[in-house]
Structure formats: C-alpha cells, structure tokens
Length: 288
Image 1 (spheres, rainbow, N blue to C red):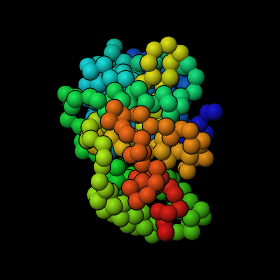
Image 2: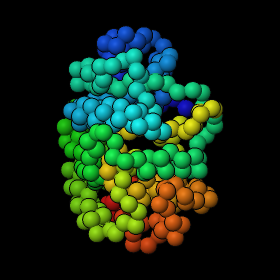
Image 3: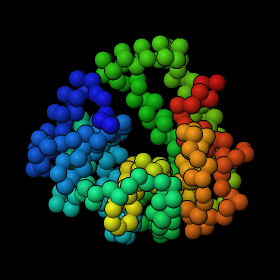
Image 4: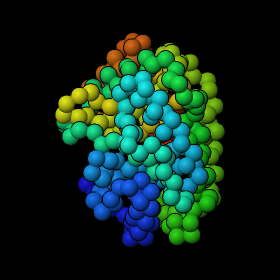
C-alpha cells in the first residue's frame, strides 16, 4: 500500500530527492516511495534511497554509514550500501540521504522465525571496527520529542491541533507528560538485571526490518539503532507482538540468541513490563 502524503510534504520530499539524486548521478524519474515514517524510503532501479531531514538525521546517517561498512567487512547479515556511491551520506541542504544496494526479489513475508539466524549472527559478533554507542532507547525518544519544539510553522500548527483534538492535551502539557514517562522508564531500565550477555544489538529487530529474499539469507535493514547493549532488547518485539498487535503466541518461540535459554524469554513479570513500555511509546500507559 502506498504511503499517503500531503501535497506540501510530497513537494518537499521530491525536491530533496531530486537534489540527492543529482549529486550522485541517479535518475529520480523512476523513483517509487516505499514508505515514509522517520525516513522517506524510495526504490530507484538498483538502488534504495533513505532520506531524512534535520541535524539529528545528519548525525544518524553518518553513524549508519560507518556501521554498514563495518558490518559489510564482517559479512554480517545486514543490508549493504551501494558500493558505486562512495561519498556517503549524501547531503542536500537540510536533508541527508543514504543510498543502498537493492536486494534480490523478495521470497515471501518474513516471520519471527526468520529473525533467528540474523540475530544470532549479530549477537555473536565481536565488537566490529566502528565506535558503537551504548544502548539508550530512551534518549532516542527524547530526541524525537525535542523535534516537536522546533517544527516548521505548518507542522507545528498541525501537531498542536492533533494533540488537542485527539488526546485532549495542549502540546506543551503532552510533551511534559512524555518527558516524565521517559524519566520513569530510564529509572526502571537501570534497575533491570539482564540474563543475556551484552553485545552488538540491532535495536529495532522486528519483521518489518527484515528482508527475506527468494534466494540467499535473510538480512536486517534499518541500522539506525545499532548499539552495544543487552541482547534481550532484540527479543522484545517478538515477545511483545501478541500483546501489542494480536499476533499468535507461536511467534514467541525462542532460540534467537546463541546464549538463549527458553526459561528466560522475557514475556511477563516485572522485567518485561518496562521493556514493553519502552518499545510502545504510543501506548495509553504513557499518559497515565
């Protein structure tokens, strides 16, 4: 299903994409928008272009390029940058892009079962030759909240209206409540006792970030959240899926990590509660 965009946003994205493509010699005329969330993702011939805006996006893109190159050197099961476009990330005004090699045709819909191999490989990596940040999921949320304070005028007006009409809060009050929840979750996470070793974690390991080709191994995409942290974190989306999205409990099967023991699967109790809350910032519990 195509991503719905306002006319204004579509124009802004088109201009940014044209600037990026012009800088690297790609024809944007055949671009097709795959999705738009934090990033706009386009496929163009043999390339995939991820486009984002702002200073945070520029810092993140530079880190992702370094991570992707280090993972490629380790033959990690992750997507790879377009090797014929060496000067990455690609800046275009306030926008920044990374350009990836488009993989082979998909071989079906990924399931939690397909996550096992790539995550086992990632968790087994020795520290790759790149400076990975310490796992800090709440900082990522705080960064996104901070962006709401400096939105362009049209976006700010829409966000204020949405907060009032959909949630019944003034935007300033809503942000204050969310910052308070961030502080609370930070404290809860700091008190958790982890059973799995610390290692390289993907940081957002769900089936939407897994590419399943018709031939070859599954690979993880979206390397924005790669860090050094507790391996349990990469298991939370699979464990939380039945409660959050109504998925079958069969998708909770373990053996994702080489160190995994079934009794430690974090699906309940005091350990799982803050993990699930951290993974679900839009849940109503955040505003309680």
